[in-house]
Image (cartoon, rainbow over all chains, first blue to last red; front, side):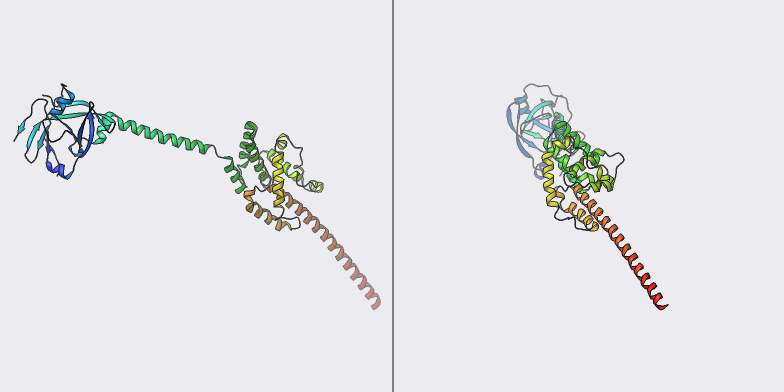
Length: 88
Length: 267
C-alpha cells in the first residue's frame, strides 16, 4: 500500500500505518514535549490544528493547497489554518 | 487561506530542527513527521555541519598520518641500510643523519649515524659513487682503524690507505659508541677467521652480514679482514709460484745434468 499525490491530495490510508508503522519518539516544540510519529512515507510533516493553536499560538500560516485524504473513510482534510473541511 | 506553519522549531533527541508543518484538523496523532529525516536535518543544516565535522576529522587524521610518514624513524632508515646495503641513495641517508647529529646533537641520533657509517664503507668500496660524499668512506674507515693497522696493506692497497686518517671531532664524539662497536667486532670475529681462504671469507662476510644484521654488523671490518686474507693469499701464491718455478728449474737442471752425464757415459 502506498499513498499518492493526486492533484494536491495526499492519500492517507490506515493500511499505510499498518504496513509501515511509525516510529514514535518524543520531541518538544517550544518546551512542550509531545509524541511524534515518524513515518517518512508521508513525505510531509503534519501538525494537528489544536496542537498548533496551543503550542504555536497565533501564528501566520502560509497558504497551501495540500489536501489530506483519509482512507478508508476517504475524508479529505484541507490544509487550512482555521477551517476544517470534511468531505465524504 | 493559510495552512502551513513555516519554520517551527522542533527538538528531537537533543537535535533542534526547523520544519514546515501542514496544519490539519486531525485527532489521530499529535505530530506526524513524514518528511525524510535527512531532509529534516538538511533544512537545518545539521547534516551538512555534521558531515563537515566528520570530513575535517578524517582529513586531520590523514594529515597527521601523512606527516608521520614524511618523517621516517631513524630505526627504519637503519634497517634499510643494513638490509639493502647496495643502494645508491644511501649517501642521502647519511647526509640526513649527519644533519640530525649536527643540529640536534642527540645521542641517539649520533648512535644511528655511527652505526650507519659502519655499514657504508663496504658499499663505497665496491661501488664508488660519483656524487657520493667521500667523508662517509673516510669516517667509516676511521672506525676500522681501531681494529687493525697493517702498513703493508696500506702500501699494497691504496684504498686501505685512505682508511687511516686523523680522527675528527665527530669521531671523538662517538668514542663510547665506537667502543660498543668494537665489542660487536669481537663477537663477529668468530664466524670469520683470518685462516680462511678468500672465497670462504667472502662467503663468510656475506653470511655474517645477513645473519648478524640485527647486531649492526661492522661490514667495513669484515671487508678489511677480507682484504688481509686476499693479500696473504696473494703473497702465498706468489711464494708458491716462485718455489714451484725454482723446483721445476732445479728438476730440469738436474735431469739435464743427469742426461748429459748419461750421454757422457754412453759415449
